[in-house]
Length: 364
Ligand code: NDP
Ligand code: GDR
Image (cartoon, rainbow, N blue to C red; front, top):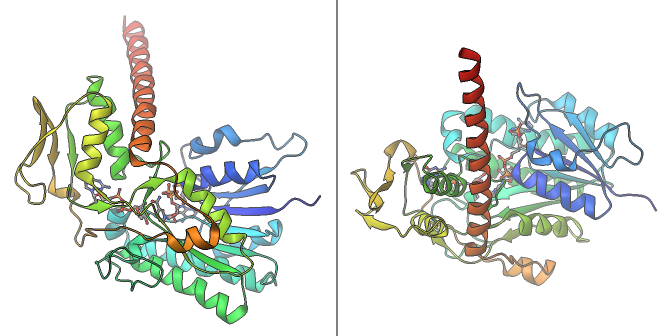
């Protein structure tokens, strides 16, 4: 049996880690691109790591960067992938306002570089291409719920870069016959979500506050509404998209929306704290959430120059064509994230305590 070969850019991120696990379970040889970093950045895939000296190794990592075309070409040539999942991106919307040019380079031109690699290397008939597109493309509300035919209206440098990536994937499909597809994914979260995205920031703070290790959580716009699903469900959808005979573009979403405020309530109730809101949460004046003491305070520094107020997806095409459906409820996911953060925060606090003890002993 010949194994399928997949190349995942962004394998060290939330989705990359879940997707690598899924593809390994399906018998693939998985190649991933990781960036050189001065500190460890493979924490999310350490459990999947295989010693390259062992026999039948099915996870291989390559150093690379979406801003480096020659390096991408070399890796694609070496790997000869059946499927490329392009997940690498500067993926933080707020950060993209501060690093707009870099975000365009990595997220937009990086996608072009990969598609060009497929073309230059004569792999247009062999290599299928998945582009990590996003509900941020819809930006300013044009239609509710948002589906594949809803017009785009990007509201950040991130979304503007991703709109280029979306269309260049469509164009290379039409121009060169590449099996290239976009997954237009609505927000998806997990215990592996980066700690500066709002959901993980909240679950981590709820855990730390409940353990007496943090006093307060500062947030931005509490009224923003998102369609939050679980990353584990969504990587299954990515895989299904590339198994179709005909490439196409699909919305993956739950079809349910909730506000940031509601997410806060769910996370704190998981640690046994009922929240009472004071103020509206949409202006800049001391809006907070209390349970006795003030637990959440709005800090305007987290407001975005242009905000996306409401995203809710219509996943019916994915359900019909791919047989895909989001299966994890928000309540279940919040529970999983808070429980995981309780463990993480406890562990970190214990390590800190041991370090402090060591310093005290050394100083005696
Ligand atoms: P993460 O931010 O968790 O992961 C991003 C990955 O991209 C990391 O592995 C990161 O490496 C890598 N990366 C960033 N810049 C570069 C670069 N210049 N060259 C090579 N690698 C780079 O994102 P998610 O896993 O949440 O998302 C995966 C993809 O899906 C992204 O493209 C994102 O924009 C998109 N998306 C995400 C959604 C979500 O809700 N999670 C929804 C819709 C789309 P490192 O670990 O070194 O930082
Ligand atoms: P988003 O996710 O911008 O939707 O992009 P994020 O969790 O950053 O923000 C969601 C909403 O929460 C509001 N918010 C805050 N956000 C952050 N990060 N920090 C805060 O303190 C805070 N307070 C309120 C935001 O204003 C926003 O309205 C994510 C990323 O994964 C993208 O890569 C992906 O494309 C989209 O989801 C779909």
